[in-house]
Length: 442
Image 1 (cartoon, helix red, strand yellow):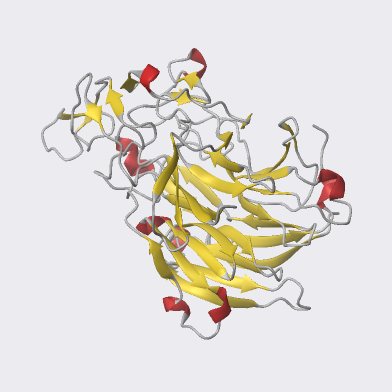
Image 2 (tube, one colour; image 1 turned 90 degrees about the vertical axis):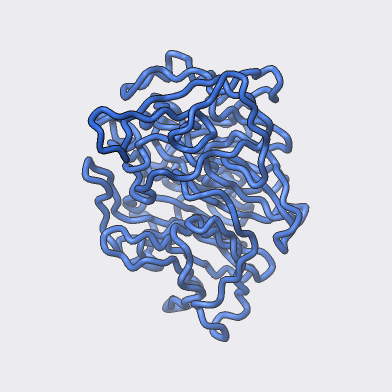
């Protein structure tokens, strides 16, 4: 039996954990009202060293979904995805400030609403705040799949904004018109334009800032926003390695919507300034028209852009996850005394798991819903042969000076033809002390 204990339970769909320099852990609940959960995100603090850990509420009333949380020099950086905002919370003011007023906006006006949100924000070695912004669409074109997304369910919604100047190929898609009372009425929609807007071959779309499907950065006071890299569809997990490299877990496109694609994996990238990561025309450097990506729910996608020779070469991934495993966030195993030491530097990645039938046709095998260990020396991977039973792992971390692994479970959550089927109060925070004894061979 593994030495794993629950530090907090009855959480409502938590998404993120962070640690301060005293080893206290902060947990962010998303605020998604699935299963009758109360709307509005919140952050709580737990001291794992206490004989009987108690929970102190730090901030409440955050815009759902809260997608990211990080700590730096007594400040929590909170990603309020539903508002396109990153806020800051002074952790030294806990108990002295009304939790409903603890979060102060730092960055506002990010694109949205759309398929994805403003995601994880982390402070880099250069004392800049790096964060990711998800795409507004599955693969560049707004479609009726907006109604399938339990956190969106609205049309029209915002269209994508490129991070670099692009030229469209004029590949429009025709869908039923959801707003017309005329039987058989249709709408034509192109890439990077509002729903119901057509495009032309050679049409130029200038870069915007802020943009979507990107990693951006700014000063710690929110000023001097600039683009780092574009073409990361939904870099939900973002973090720096001890050697200063910035890694992103990019969630791949799905077999849904106006531009479906099959068997597209989630990818682990090293993020570099000025690079293009391929979205919306490449997946891990492979064109979307490649037969391996043949969808079930529509025709094979073709290039949405033209003039690729004028764009940076699409970057290659460090690692490709099993399609639909839904890799979310990661943490590097620290160098500490104890049994985990031989594994120091390896990455533990949380795999949320498939969301069939929304992301893939019914009958797709269940994947993910566990942990993966990746060795940056050769980017090989291994799993775990035991440990706590998790419904939907979403974040993982290590407190400073500790080899214990902290695991965050989103809770019971499934998709169905009727939409989200979720149970509130099923999220949990685990502390796993002897996890290195349960690493399976690669």
